[in-house]
Length: 218
Image (tube, rainbow, N blue to C red; front, side, top):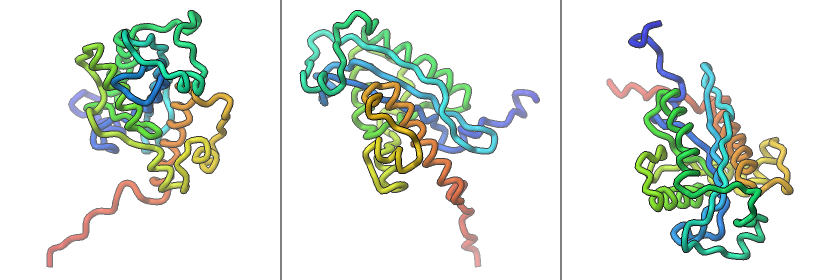
């Protein structure tokens, strides 16, 4: 099939030309401008020819606190992260985000999409830290939409009546270990499974593609 006759990837027709990419961050507080970003994971989402979503590859980076960053001890106790542990093999924000963004840009192109849209559980939190770090590092090619997100806490509240990730996963039949939680890769992968499950369930129920508009002509 020639390039001219090639059919667009089905993903490009599902979310207004956006590629969902699931992101989870671990941080040293709640303030994206002040508190350190310590870990970031991104999980790609793909779609088969029949329109079913599935989880793809996971990318993880450990991040060094930026110069002057605040480190809330209560946040470090919660995540169990020692920012200065040598075994973390952490890198500066700019390097870490570049390593995360590169495969995302490639996936956007491969899926015939125009940009990525961040999917997260309470997505505004992850989005704010990603964009604050990208601005500090002066990264020009951020693949994510600057303000749109898909929030699985909201979607899970609609689909399963619960907004907590662990409980929503259990209600969706997705195994969830509280011992492994609060690692960015684990939480991102479970969030990706939840997102794919909700979108696929909506398709199963006949919610997508939506019915054609009624003919209003008389």
